[in-house]
Amino acid sequence: MRYYSTNGQAPLATLEKAVVRGLAEDRGLYMPESIRPLGSAFFDNIQDMTLHEIALAVADRFFGEDIPAERLKEIVCDTLSFDIPILKVTDTIYSLELFHGPTLAFKDVGARFMARLLAYFVRGGQHAANAGREVNVLVATSGDTGSAVANGFLGVEGVHVYVLYPKGKVSPIQECQFTTLGRNITAIEVDGVFDDCQALVKSAFMDADLCRHMMLTSANSINVARFLPQSFYYFHAYAQMKRLGKADNLVACVPSGNFGNICSALFGKRMGLPIKRFIAANNANDIFFDYLRTGVYSPKPSVQTIANAMDVGDPSNFARIYDLYGKSHEAIRADISGASYSDTQIADTMRECLSSNGYLLDPHGACGYRALQEGLREGETGFFLETAHPAKFKQVVDDITGGDVEIPGRLAAFMRGKKQSVPMPKDFPSFKEYLMQA
View 1: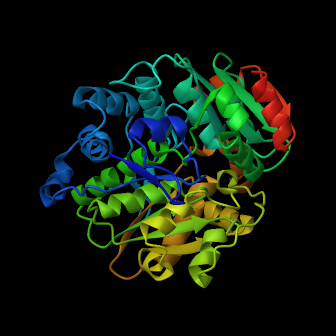
View 2 (view 1 turned 90 degrees about the vertical axis):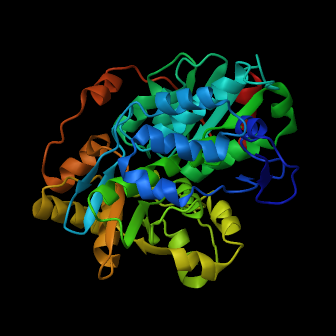
């Protein structure tokens, strides 16, 4: 499979180059030249397949031409060492709980898959051009990406990870999950917002001095190895809903920040996944919602909210969605609707859902639940992505619900660690100087 850039000015890349480089030479995002559909027989029998079987079939369409079958199977099985259940919340709304991985967040799947695929290339692979070289992973995080990537790559030989996060704008538990690890993980505390962190990462890729000094890649959803595996969720959810007899007129609602998650779902639809339509649920950072209404994409500085992992003012993966739909606003609107909620609305939704249904939402999942509650049409059933365990936002959740969320043992272990971070201003020259000395 070859990969092209959304900016159209870079040469075609192999999978290895797309994964190891992360961003194309023209600052565009890599896209596969073709999206191979799954046949009708696959969907006729999907309800009888395991999560591993479904994920392997999907992964083969993206990576099977480049990775030997047995190695791809190992990567998929090692990535998905946990279950992803779907639970009924109301008669028409279901929650796909994606927080059963090592860091209790949906990004565990993409991060673990990428770590194993990148390790395959740097350890030799098949004729791998980068065998034996140390790869430096730069990742910007607004919350859960950093912890998922840091833990996914922890101890991987030949890889060093730099996690850039906005000072004071991630939850204490999220911060513990990537600042206490040490070893091959370095946490960089940027005096700015998430968009500043993301800008530093993108600028680093384009800097000739840095690229000569060290091999750089990204583990944000700009990397094809991070966002494509997230499509597994949607095929698995469809299979579970089909077992329940609820797969007709199915709607998927995705709490959206950098838009890698919903982008992977749209790739799944192109592969034949029979989900009727999608809802992108935003917090106060409503850039995509504004685009749906106006047809004009206008990035703006992000604002801090209680759903902090969605605090993104210029979502990178909009470029992929725009490209996938031939730059047609009308075509995008045909498949995707939007919603945007304030902190007050998010908090009200969390209290209402707990009171009415006994289901405890985290602030991000609350956006998805409310968007379905308000947006489902007659005859439709929907599922939303509950993207992280409520305990990751314990103080916020407890203050809103008046409860005391129990902290799972895995999170408590992180909180006992010692914080190790490097303070950094948001200007690129300072960041470049730091990396040049690494």
